[in-house]
Length: 387
Image (cartoon, rainbow, N blue to C red; front, side, top):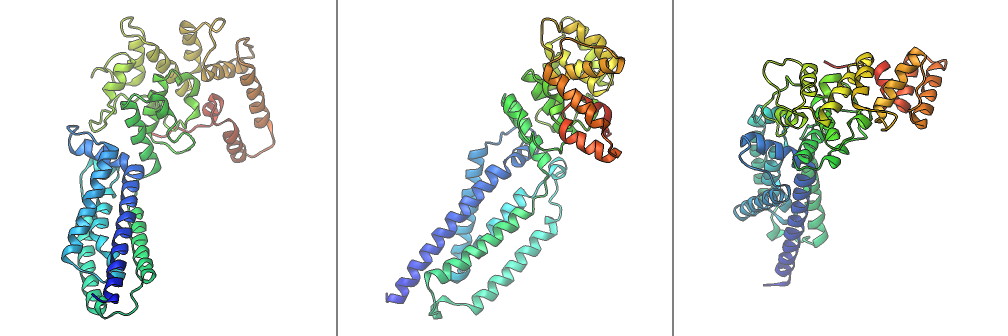
């Protein structure tokens, strides 16, 4: 073996190992940190709940499987050293197809555009490989150096990584929803409450399971308006939403509240009222759900009547949202309350002062939302409810 052959062999080894390391790092990181929740949901739905997705183990298995696909391909198709990274195309195509799923694809299994996109990609790749093998040949190349091989291969890998990461079209909200659901099933209610807590986006399902997590930590009445409430009472609990694909089902939530909802009960208010008026079913969570239902329904009259059945404000501090609602009602009626926190009183005065400023309706609404969007007052006066 002459010097050039030794050089080419050493360069080829470094190229292969560096590409392999970069691919496995990307693949594991991408699957575990970015796509784990989606794959977990997909496995549950497709297996009808018979198998469980283990995030770390599954990410490792997928990573090594795709690496094995690359090794098999490169064994049968020899590419010039400067184009070696293209041997990862089949693996990256499989990774892209595996992770290019959203809630619609999960609920109604379909390959979608990959039905025709995958064959086109494979045929195009085959044409490119044939062209490269005919034009480039390491045997007759005199400029095979380590930098001249590493840089093109790493750039090719980077481009393929970017393409793979650009295909999934799931929203942040759906990722939050799946993560909250998983954490609840694991019993990590406190951690579930913090998922996406700074985001102003939400869905009805995400709102519903967030409220359940808050209830399980005893914080529903305290923090209900710390999260967007775009769906009113349906975002608290929708007893008509009995989709069987959820890992956390309606019956699971209702069991924690007090009882599974019977088929004769047609709305959430009737269900909650029946639970809290039945001594053997009434629980602390059921009471909080009932009181918060009235807040979300903007029913101050019934709320102020019922809250004193379950709380004695002279002996127990009321949760923040309950204080805000009672203070708002008292202000409307010209009454005063001596059990409201000083901070809440002060914040309410600021809220009224801001409302009194000479601003047009849109500017006033936006400004009050930035400062007071986490209060019952803003919800009561400004929140529009989605169907």
